[in-house]
Length: 128
Image (cartoon, rainbow, N blue to C red; front, side):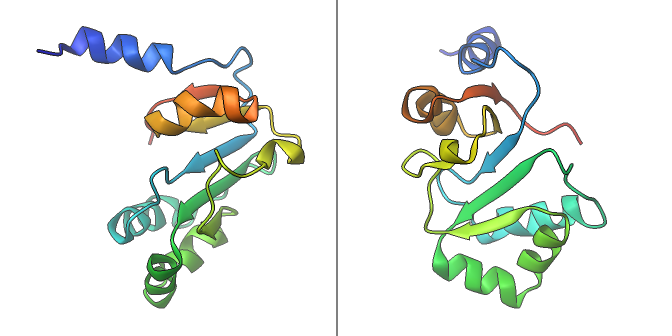
């Protein structure tokens, strides 16, 4: 049986950032679903992403099209975030844009990003 202590230890092991100045936030690994985009649109409604932070939300082309029709993409992008389609931080090359510290809620991305992209990672859920 996995205990809460073991879960917390796992989360701590996925945090590798030495500098807590996050400059890149990436969500959607695996790609965000329609319901996740709806929730994010609601959370970001009327808010702005810091000009010092780039935020990408990964999804696939079909889900992005549906989310666009429902107004979720517009709401997310009005905050300053970018909704990508068929893109993956791990397999992409976002480090070429100069990002150093990634914040993510994806265990998969937190595990692979240090080795694949050279990022320090802040892993966890957003503080609302």
